[in-house]
Length: 553
Image (cartoon, rainbow, N blue to C red; front, side, top):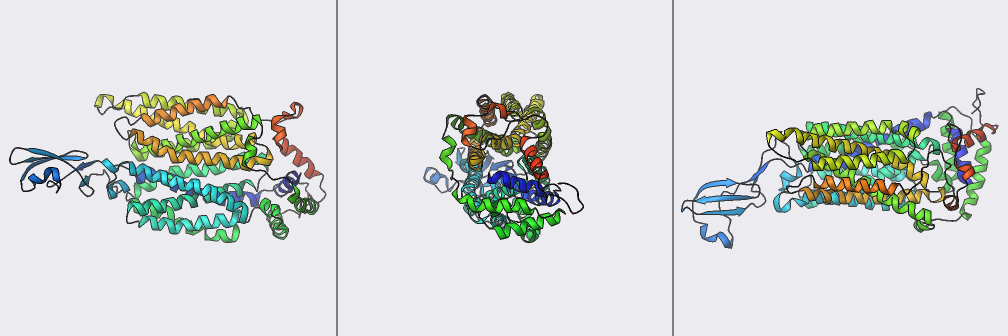
C-alpha cells in the first residue's frame, strides 16, 4: 500500500506541475549527448571513395625478385594494385596501411580514412560500434545497481560531466585501440546517464502521466537525431565533430544546484528529512500548501517498508503468464533495438546524400514520437505495435528486394529502396515510443522495475549485434542486413499476438494479479485512467490538499 499512498502524495504535488515540467525539460536535454554518442558512428565510420596506390613492389618473399625492376605503369583497385614492369611482366600486390588514397567528396575525415579501416581491416569499423554498445550494456548493469544504491542524482551528475572529459580524450585518440577503449568507457557512462535521467523523470509523475513523459523524452531523442547530420555536415573532420558533441555538457554545470534526488528513492531509503525538504520545495515552487496529513502516512509506511518482501530477476519467470510475457518482451526489445540501430548505422551507406537521408529519417522519427500519445490513446498499445512491426518488416524486405545497380536507368530504383528503408525506420521509431509504455503495463508493480531493466538489457544487446549484422552487407550484397531486420520484425509481430492488450485496463500490482485477473475490475470505465480517478478522488478528501487561495486540489 505504500506505493498507492506515495502516489497520492505525488498527485497532490502535481496539481500545478510547474516544478515537474521544468525538471522534465532539464532532464530531456540530457538526451542530447546521449543520442549524439549513440548514433554518431554513422558518420565516424563513413567510407569515402578510395584506391590502393603502391609506388613499388613490397619487400616480401614472393616478389623479392622484382625489387630492382622499374615500374612502367600502375593500376590501382580497391585493395590491390597491379604493377606493370618494363620487362613486360606484371604483379599484383596488396595495399598496406598508409598506402591507400582517399577521395572524399567534401573533404571528410573519418576513422576509416585515418586508420585505413578498409579491405582486411574493414570489419574494425563495425567492431568499434559493437564495442561501444558493449559498454552501454555494462553501464546498464553497473549504474542500474548504483542508481538504486546511492541515488539517481549522483549517478546523473557523474555520467553527465565525466563524458565531457572522455569525449575530448576520444577526439585526441592517437590510435584505433585507444579510440575503441575510450568509446567503451563512454558507452558505460551514457547508459548511466540515460537510466538515471529517464527513471528520475518518471518518478516525479503519476503512472497515468508517464506515457506523456516518455513521449517528451523520445521527442528530445528525435530532435537530436535531426540535429546530428547538420553538425556532421558543418564539421567533416570526425575529431572536430567529437568535440562538438562533448563540450556542450559543460553548460549544464548549474544542474548541480537544481536537479533534485528522486522523492521516491529518498522515501524508499527512509531519508525522511531530505524527502520532507524536497516536498516543501516542490510545494513552494508549485504554490501549494505542504500536504501534512498524507506526508505523515507516507512517513509511517516508509518505516514499515523494510518488512515487505523483496523481489528479484527470477520472479519474472515465476508463473506461466509471466514467463510468456517476459520471453516475448525480451525478443521484442532485442528486435526493435537491432532494427533501429542497424538501420541508423546503415542509412548513410544507402543511395543518395547521406546527410539528407539521415536528416529525413530523423524527421519522420520525430513525427512518430510526437504522434505516439494520440495513437496510444486512440488505438491502445497492441494494435499500434502490431501495425509497426508488420509495416517495418514489409518495408525492410521491399527495400532489400529492390536491385541496387549503378546503371543510370536503375537510378530511380535505388532511391525507392532508400525511401522504403527510411519508412521502415519510421515504424521502428513508433515501436520504441509504444514499447516502453506497454512493458510497464504488462508487469505487476512489485517487479515492474526489474522487468523494465531486463528488457533494456536485451535492447542493449540489440545495439551490440546490429553492427555485426550490418557487416553481412560489407560485400556486394549491401541490402542483406535490411532483409534480416525485416524478417526479425515480422517474427516480432507474430509473437506479439501472444500478449494481451493493456489499454484501459487496471495495472496489476501483484504477481497474482497477472495470473488470476479479476475480470470485473479489469476494464476501466470512462476516459480517465483508473489510477488517476482513484488518486484524484482521494486527494479531494485530504483537508490540507488546498492552495492558499482556497482552491481545492
